[in-house]
Image (cartoon, rainbow, N blue to C red):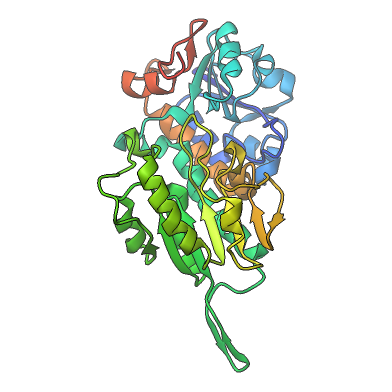
Length: 375
């Protein structure tokens, strides 16, 4: 078979159940003229069998053969350079690289002569929406956070009127209204909770209301938008932080479930809830910290553990999308296909990335780190 050779490895990171290609995307890549190799067992965590990949047209191979002569390697979390020794010189690797925290990985890729394409750096522009892995995975994470919190919570979410009396609806507060927060609001509403939400960006007020939730915002401090470039949140001023903290403290004390989702790219997660605030909540309340792997929004949260503080249960997963591996893999792999197919030249069989998207996601090329955000 001619054309580009694409390889997918089984993920090696602890707790990573996702896979970077599904039979659906394998078929689509082969339809573009590529040949496809998948490591044995790569899809097992996402309920995809080797037989499913073979039926889609992929070669299912042992690890020592899967990367042989690969032009492009697809992964969820970027593999160690050692696993890519048999790829073609200058091979491209499209994956998540966690570039700000894992700078040594980018250096290793540069030294190995590989072209690292970091999917986290996908620009937030209209034509790249279908390629945005952060959004697709955050959407699922917001949904899962509410389900996990509901499961931990010792009471029901919706109001129930029964012969034995009425069960009150749970009060759920979502802190941070990005993709994950919006899905958390929608999911908590579907489960029947009374939902409120807040964010540093005042523009999210309408989004919160459109989902039937109550916005919780400081009105007394003017002119603080908190909107950074590309729709990402930036850090707030001290004045706003103080006023917001007071408002939120009073609100948190009345909540049964709190979901925190605040992340700033390249920085430790901002602290949203202190131990003193946790102490004001009623026993049996649940806080789900979606940012726990980046340092946590909640004082005392520990990844993959349920911690009890002042009778309040604090939880969070180090890799929330991996708890929905089949759907997370399906969306992630479509993001990768949408990215590469957008620049696919069928006549030459090459992928020619443009400047706007190519330069944004490319970390390394020609033996050097080339991304401006890492220099």
